[in-house]
Length: 230
Image (cartoon, rainbow, N blue to C red):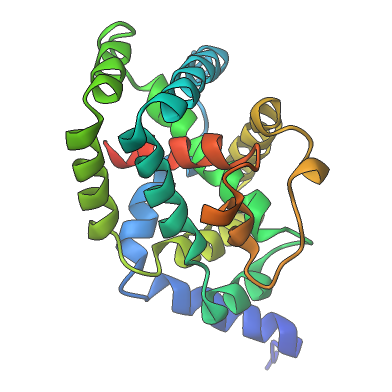
C-alpha cells in the first residue's frame, strides 16, 4: 500500500484551497472569474478593447475633475476595495499562491483582465460608448446604481476574489496567460509597479481613498465598476 504524504505547507494549501471552493462566497467569485479560465478565441483582439478602455479612462479622469458625483463614484469604489482582504483571506492568499505574488498586483491584473473580456464582448462598438457618455453626463443615477451593485456583493468579495485568483493563476495556464497579459497592458495606465506599489499590512490600501493620487487607482476602479454593470 502506498501512502501519499504532503509537507505541512502543502497540506495547508490544499485545505485552504478546498475551503475557498466551499465558501458561501464562492459562487459570486467564480461567476466573476470563470470567463478568464477559458482559452481566448483565436479571433479575439484585446488591443481594441484596451484602446477603448484608454479612451474611457481619459473621459472619466476629465469628468472626475469637473463633476463631484463622478469623483464621489471613484471614492465609493475605492472605499469598497480598500476594505479587503481581511486577515483570514490574506492568510489564504499567501497559502495558495504559487509564487511570490503580491495582492495588489494580482488584484489589478484580475479586474483589468475581466474588463478587457467585458469590452471584447460588446456587440456594438457605438452603443457602448454612447451608454458611457450618458452615464458620465448623468452621474447621479449612475452613482446610485453603482452603490446598489457594490452593496449586492458579499462583504468579503475582494478578499475571496484575490485568494481565488492567485490560486487559479497557479492551476490554469489560460487564466495565468490572461492575467499576465492584462498586467502588461495595465502598466501603460499605472506606470511601472515600483512607481505606485508599497508594502503594507493592508495591501489594497495602496488603491484606497487616501491614495487616489496613485496612478493605478483610477484605472483599477474603473475596471471593477465597468464589470459590475454586466
